[in-house]
Every structure is written in structure tokens, then in C-alpha cells.
Length: 459
Image (cartoon, rainbow, N blue to C red; front, side, top):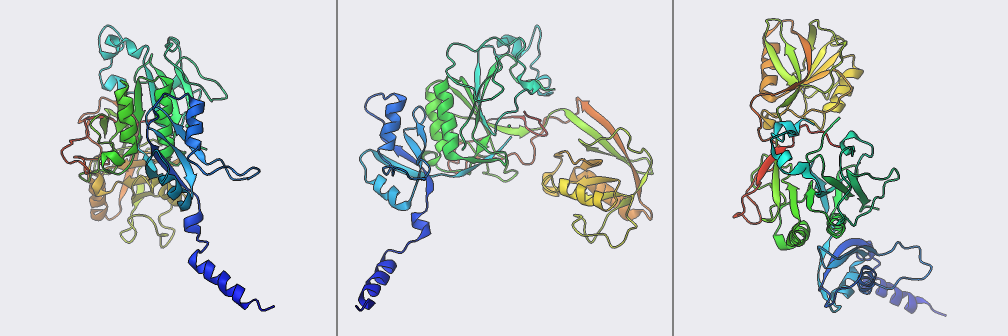
């Protein structure tokens, strides 16, 4: 039997309907549908949402298609679909529109005293009863159970309006009343007697799915929170396409106050995120606290910086300075061993400084002086380097480089002074804090306020 004609038709069918991985692969979508005519209980709502999806194959190993079933802040659901299946759903009665899932960015002690929230006979805290009875829902990357921030001493039980749950193995308490994950981490809180409910919508790498974030919003509203705090955001887009804006609008209509981070894309104009008028959009500013460290030059000049790595036994003697004009960013091996035992001076931003410190240490450096890029202005961002070091703003770093250029044998000593309060010239807006106005709607001037957001430690 001649199979040539059959092979021809098989090849023709393949080219007419190729097995393209781009069309048959699964992607995540948020599907908006018409609101139900009558109020449905959770189980019925889920079944209605599942009716839009392709039928499950019995015995199939494919993961369930329905990811989230929304009820309180959005009419619809999130699911994994092929392009072909999405086209079928588009034709179904009740379909409104589909949003491809997007990756959002995670944006986010002494602060209460700095803001004048005094505990005692006066101050905002006292007038507000220290936040007693208020439930704050936080959408973030998780929670660290057992951290002192969640000590519930003196905190009353949550109000009867609380309907949430706790998924922590260690359990919750009167302070941390709820903890839920929407995906498949000695300080004092800002409202000492308020209750916290944490909704994990981001992984530990700072990646957040819009579908998971919307699920967190939905769960928080359903649980009965009074305030929503979101340290996540996306690029500016029309408000009718911004699912965080849509979800938070539904929350605001229910009387829930929504506070969002303005973003970390500054100092560029029109870079602000979360610009909907019904959100409180918060810029990042400094606090009057410094982890002070100094670079002292032989002539007596002292250059001020900051450091989280301040060993008590570090030498107070002057040490030689090593700086390479060929490799100011310290990404090249030194030409010889003459630099060993020196303090390295490197131009590095916060994203590189840990690696630079390890590189310097591996080459025999005693300490690191890191100089921030010019674009960061007076902002000094600090992080643990696990190596003695000082981080300088660009202007202070330029003074050090000028000394190095003028000295035949440059030396300096490092002085660690620990944490210092009541630092002047604060608050100032951090260079990375996003600027307004809104790109999508230029008539909206954002951010609304600024709050401590530079070198803040969270749990």
C-alpha cells in the first residue's frame, strides 16, 4: 500500500495547525466576569467560576486550573489557560475581559519617636488609644514569627469583626492575629495595640504576582481588616487596567483605608506607582537616626558616613588606602600584593557592595570604604557586609578621592560610633523614592505624603 498520500496530508495538517508551544502552553490570567445577580456563598461562587474553565480530565496529573476565586474586591477568578482555552472563555456569556498575570515589585524602631507619636499623656498614639481595636492587613513577602515586633503584651484580643485565620505552625497571638500565604518572612510597631494580619503575596526574592496580590486583597477584605498596607507596585497604567487600583477601590468603598508605597524608581519624574486617588501614596524619606562611622584623614579632617558593620576591636590606627583609577568600581584584580592590609576605596551602589566587600576581603583588605553613585546624592543606603566598612555619600566620597589624589602616601583611620539619634537635616526624601505626577493621569499629583523608608528594618 502506498502511504505517500497519507504522509502528504499529515504534513499538510501539521503546517496548517502546528503544535506550537507558545499557543498550547499554559499561562496565568485574571478573568473578569459580570457580577452575579444574586449573592453566592463561597462554594457556589467557586463552582460558577469553574464553569468557565475546561472540564477536568479524570486521572489527569495536570494541576487544578483555578488559582484564585475572588469575591469581595473583584468579580472574577485567576486561572492557568492555553491561548485556545482563553478564546473559548471570551465567547462565554458573562465574560468581561482578561488580564495577563504580571509580576509586581516589592517596594519596602526609632520611627515612632521621630514622628512624635509619644506614649504618655500627649501625642497621636494616646489620642488614638494606641491603635486599639484596629486591624491592619499587610500585603508583603511574609512574616517572621516570634520576632519582638509581634509581642502581644498589653494587646487586647481582636475584635469580633475579625474573620481571618492563622496558617503559622507556631500559631498567632493577640498582636499577630492572622497569617496567610497567597502563593503556591528589638523594634516597636507603629500602632502598639493594633492587630496585624499578614498576607504573603510575594516570594523572598521580591517577586509578586498580580493574581496573588489580588487574592490577598480579597482575603483581607473578607477577613474584616480596617486598614490595608501594600508595599508592592507596578508601572503606571490607566486605572481601568490596574488591578491593584480596581481591587483597592472596592476595598475603599467598603470603608477600608488603603495605604500604598509610591515606588522605588526615583529620582525620575512620572515614576510614581499606586497613583489612584483613593489610595494614600507614600514616598520614602529618611529618619533622624544614623549608624555613624567616620573616615579620619591624617590632617585631622573627618568624613562622615554610615555602617552596619562596626566591630568593637577594629584598629584605631591609620591604615594605607588602596584606590585604583583603572578600576574604581573594584571589579578587577589588583596588579600586585602591595594593597594587602589596606583599606579599599571602591565606588559601588547597594546592589554590589556585599560582593565588593567579599572581593576586597579575599585580596587581603582590612576594611572597605564604599562610595555611592552621584545619582544617589546625599542618600546613604546601608546593608550588612559582614566586613568592616563605611558607606559614604557621593560628595563625601569625592572629598576622600581628592585627598587620595593629592597625597603621596594616603592613609586614613576608621572610627565607629554606633547608632546616633537626632541627626540634623531630616527628614529628606530618599533619591530612589518615585516622583510624580502620575504618568497615566498627569492631573493626579502623587505621592501624598512621605514616611520613614530609608534604612528601615522590618520583620
